[in-house]
Image 1: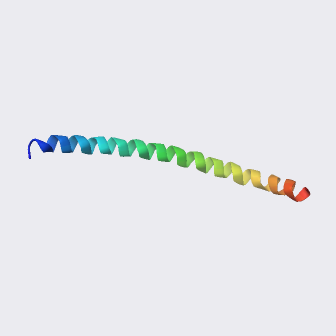
Image 2: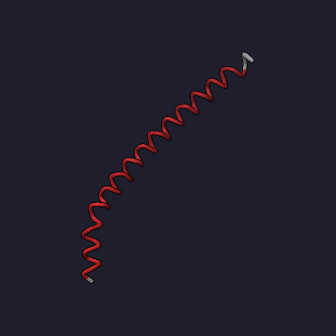
Image 3: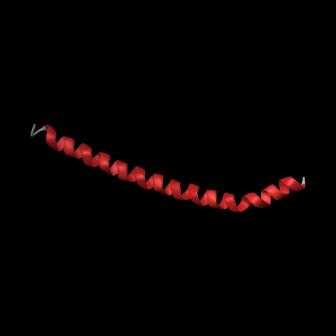
Length: 54
């Protein structure tokens, strides 16, 4: 038990750091997609008018 405990704690810390890194990456992509959606919502009326004029 004393031998497997440090390895378990090390793997747990490694998993926690991996989880925090993936969460930071996910948050970054979420912000990117959010701003892209806001930009797309701003662009859609002009595009719809351009399509309607054709």
